[in-house]
Amino acid sequence: MVPQPDRSDRRPMLYRRLHRRLRDIGRRWFGAAPPEIVTAVTAAALSYAEPIALDDLHRSVRRLDAACVPGVMVEVGCALGGSAIVIAAAKAAARAFEVYDVFGMPPAPDGNDGPDVHARFAVVTRGESGGIAGQRYYGYRGDLLPEVRANFARHGIDPDAAAVRFVRGLVQDTLHGDGPVAFAHIDCDRYASVRTCLERLAPRLARGGVLVIDDYLVWSGCRRAVDEYFAPRRHEFRLYWRARLHVERR
Ligand SMILES: C[S@@+](CC[C@H](N)C(=O)[O-])C[C@H]1O[C@@H](n2cnc3c(N)ncnc32)[C@H](O)[C@@H]1O
Image 1 (cartoon, rainbow, N blue to C red):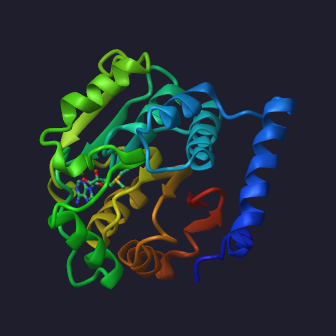
Image 2: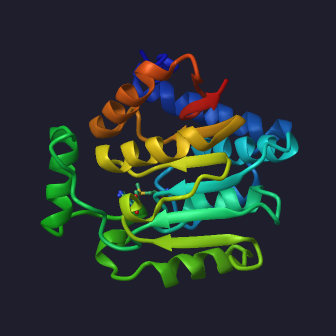
């Protein structure tokens, strides 16, 4: 029921590499290079999202600010802070931005997640997961919040001055409120986490506001939560693809 994305990712690896290389060269020559903050976050290995997905976040936030869509901006699933830094850099300084995470070891999946998610989590709990670009996996580093704050500072953003609020804990316990939401980046991998975000954020989405859902094509639990939640609500929301799945209030 969710519209299908561009299938170019089914093409052979060599073709995709060549296509990416040509696209990058084209962007450099013709001025469509990704924003500097995207390049910087990628170079610092702070995000699981590839540049085109970070660029998608950046553009979406800029567009919503320019259109004066009312409400807060939200991210659920911050890890090292890469995508949150891009959102914070793109948004208007005064726009409140709430960033939710446990800031440590991610929570376990449950029976609503498929074998893919459980297999991945087993690797994590055995202590065998690698991190981004060969770093130590973020879940093994203890309290991540000071590290995330330092990553923001390193990219020129003082979270307090930029109206960024970090909210620690399981989103099931921490995500409340009923004010309007202009934008939310939902990047939390598991059924229960994504389902909670949808139940608590979608009803608050302002007209023209957007949810960007990171993991629809990657993790079965996320896909299930999205399919279940939106199946009876398609008259209220429009689902479409950019670099990730977008959901917009009609
Ligand atoms: C893939 S990472 C986020 C990646 C990040 N957005 C980036 O740019 O690389 C997923 C994050 O979701 C968080 N998460 C998952 N379920 C959660 C929940 N129920 N409550 C709070 N955080 C959760 C994990 O702790 C983890 O940091």
